[in-house]
Figure 1 (spheres, rainbow, N blue to C red):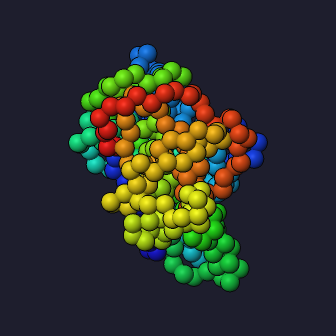
Figure 2: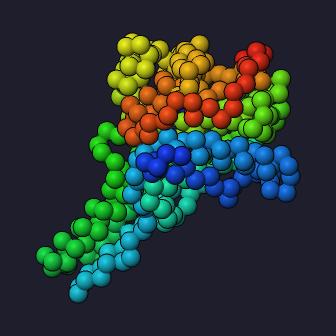
Length: 321
């Protein structure tokens, strides 16, 4: 059996015609936090999906589909393939493994849920891992059969490992998001967040960034040195200087500001490590540049279209995500 596997790092803690990547929210493992039977659950779904749409409009990559090939049968030998996706359970302990999952072309799937999270964490997001195998019954293939089998094998593992992206670019099938079920939330993304509450829109915006490789991927680590991020797009968005990172190297440093993507106002970056209670954040030019350095293709956005809602930030004790 030929086996290849990868466990993606997990970091604790959503239209342009040219866009291709689709962030798909999956509620299979969701808790009552996202229940369609309650007003709060429906509001939470609408907000997380609005954030997913925000990212879908932003990202222009075309992603190869992932599906397990049909068995290859030769005259004297055959081959079968298998793969699995694994991710942190968004609504409980441990991990979840799904065998021979089918991921559509351009789909980036995120399983969401809620549970009590430790400390001051309002959310937790991370990319998923995978494992894949090729199992031949024997190696008694003709040259023609071997070439046909090899073509299927290479295409399958390219889809699983890179989604058709270039070497050195972040890729994956998706991941999971979990939100703290033990805190007061502002769930409606169409209204300003309430004082003393965590804004679900802002937290989801931050955590989906982690599922896309920000702070949580091997590609990210290639740019960390060690207190600054050396990606060229990020340096350009930060006035030509490498943006500083937080103490653990997973976020922009506390207080790092940038202009809102598609707007003119400045704010603390969405990928900074904390969020004020009652505060609404948007993606900034620096946040988007960080994704670009990871290899994501960015769809240019006309000025003025990037802000879902403009609201004054209400300052409260800061809560780390």
